[in-house]
Image 1 (cartoon, rainbow, N blue to C red):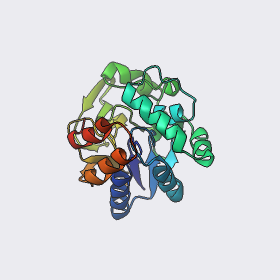
Image 2 (image 1 turned 60 degrees about the vertical axis):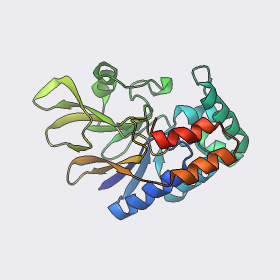
Image 3 (image 1 turned 45 degrees about the vertical axis):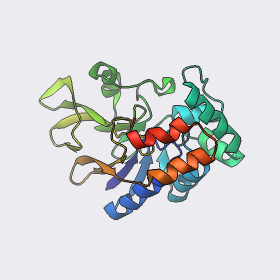
Image 4 (image 1 turned 90 degrees about the vertical axis):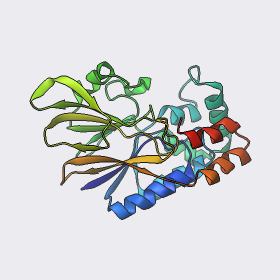
Amino acid sequence: MKYGILGDIHANLSALDTVLQALQRDGADVIVSVGDVVGYGAAPKECIARLREIGAHVVLGNHDAASIGRLDMIYFNQYAKEAVLWTQRVLSKADKDWLAALPLTRHLDHCSVAHGTLHRPELFDYIQTTDDADPSLDIMPLPVCFVGHSHVPVTLLRLRDEPDRTAYTPDPEIELGDVLRALVNVGSVGQPRDEDPRTAYALFDTELNRVEIKRLVYDIDREAARIRAAGLPRMLADRLYLGV
């Protein structure tokens, strides 16, 4: 079985289409999204439609929750707030109903999925250190869990021969043979923040027992133009070129 894992899409249609085409070439059997389908970008309706068309398994992100009025924006910066308010205006009732029905976590046959953390998904906390990862690693019902939220790809893991020690690796290829549990942040499809502007996604091959984080060039010019044309803050377009 091959799982295609989508990090934070953030209404970036050009990046999403590039990744979906690549996953088709990769032979992905199942498409999974770690949430934040909307926010920041200017194609929220189109991105929702793409995921619905392919029957993706999606969890709720904090920008998704804010866009349906389920999350207070007190911790959002001004640019994020403006994008959420714009998104609220353009989404249809059907779009909002779809977002509202998304669960905070999913447990599939071979992996679990959450947006920020698995142990307290409703808080949308970040996993940025091994200490942050430990509570989620402790309760993982399956050997692999995929998350997003920070937009920076990294894997936090426990090895079979050192089950009480949490380590991390930025390596794009993670062989799972010696891994007891792996918490994989797949980065971001639509807004990478590791100073690499290429779109990011993951391919999880259960037969090879391997996760690979892949990067692809996409049409940033097209997406930046879409953001500017929508009247969203220009910074949201400019940052796509920098990967920040």
